[in-house]
Length: 295
Image (cartoon, rainbow, N blue to C red; front, side, top):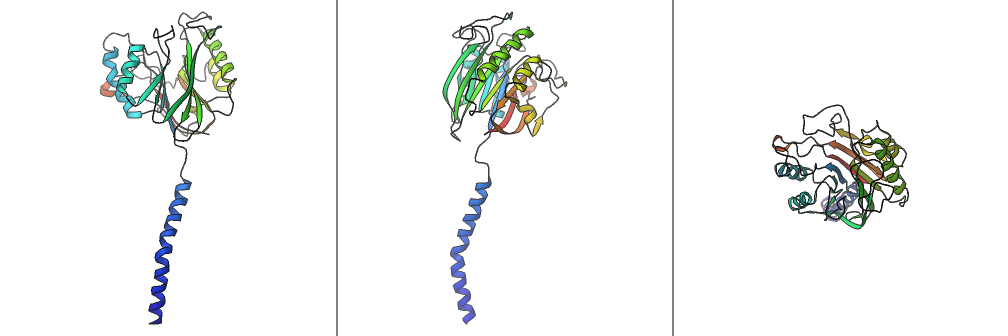
């Protein structure tokens, strides 16, 4: 009888202690989980809206929508989009806002538009400059390139973590190597003027094969930035060329579309996206996507 009473008393005590132990265990488990959500970052040359069928923008637009719906990047550096094309993209992606300026000024010419999920990221400041000897002069060009080139950048606050970071988006020249190198030098110089403790992501179509061009050396090896592709723990479609020209995919591992970074704690995955909704290339470039965590 005494044993029964003692057992009941013990049960009464453990009846309150056990839930507390469970709660403590759950709290410890939750504390061990990552507190900083990943950012999904993409660079994507959209191919300007000017091609005839079968690669016209109206025909490609549903495929671009399907691809972005599938991957849902938090921030996307786009290249070559024309104003009406970007408005179409914004209509198809109502959870995103965007920042950009035509490289010929105003709404004229191609944009380096930055799209971002407004529920995740808050823009704090932004600006544009031209890749020339007079960077603040709209539509300026200096280095023998027939096509004007520029940078659009945004300083974001991550609503999930409160942290801030810079996102820079560019498109280097496709013809003149000297222009690519001078552009890379200018970008390196300007990045060097930013606060070193604020992470930075530099995305774009660099028209230069990673690891095989002086422009890559300047930006990925000499500027304090690293290539997220090589930093990633997993690389998907590693041998895919990021430029397709709407032709069958080539497997030479030539990436001209890069995401460079500083202040990154981890890059879990990078991917050259080979998705072809309904058998159609959405663009003549593959998007390159990185899943990363900032410091």
